[in-house]
Image: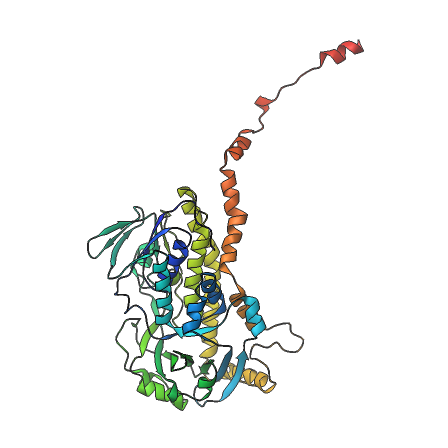
Length: 463
């Protein structure tokens, strides 16, 4: 059970997506008053596209008591199959070792955004969070700790959390202008299809398929208890705008190149629920915390990951968990600033590192045909022929750089890091403010306090 904060304060969360709901749960669990402001109706902001929940995220949700709910909707996956997108050629496999995942205290789950959103929404309400739908925030005043809604209402809080994504108002307030991002010439397109249209393997095991193409790629995995398959395409695309909530895109078939795996071609030609998310490059934020120390951004608003990144959702939940861990120690308002800056210190490097790792995965997956692509494919097939995982070390090697990255990512426990900060720094600051510490600081050596005493009795005896 979490510690309950000695001092209870009010939080306003802008955005009712995964990041917003997770932060609301984390803070309400430790006793704070939290309200979530969501501009949509609570349905249109949850997508039916698939998501992959890595072990570093499942361990957090399990700590929050949500493991049974996740098991009801999620499928545990331990197998990845890598193939060529053009011709179904199998390149290699990766089987996650059960004992390794057990050591990391997490599992790799396959589900949908809508199912995860529902679980978090129900949990937030159960913890007393007030979720307001159709509550569009039109302005944020960090100095006053106020937000104004389109309805004309003005709401106040001790801390405002911006969790409305890279295109939301929160990022704009922190940057000082609207950050539209720069399209990189690629898009991620999400869709689903009935399982009967896919190979038998996906009905028999919770396999994740990754297809490597010429400057493009695709991933697929089962959802809804294997009744459907979620697919993600990453494709070269001239479109400059496209995000969640847009009308279904109609040009998926034209964007998928030929020749193509016939199963993938079937999906591309028949998809009616495809959603395009244009990949954009956003300038990294130097600071996630406003100078007033009453406003902070989290999730995609703070660190915009590409839509295909496995860790995009996980980083938002890690952000939320760290906030909850820090603010469970709140006993005075003058701690708010130090906690927000500690949150940034703990999270910024981790997110920046994984952002680069995810970009590396995308580059590896979408190599254009040529020497680098050929070397990649031959290396994968050589391991497969030898009966090894794609991340297996060569003879004489302890582990590959890829496996080292994966282990460091999955094994990470953000809540432990937040606890470490409190023990190493937070407690020291609190002790430094105690009356005993103040008295100790008053005992400062100065020469004006020095005196010399002479023992006259000793001199008399000598005479």
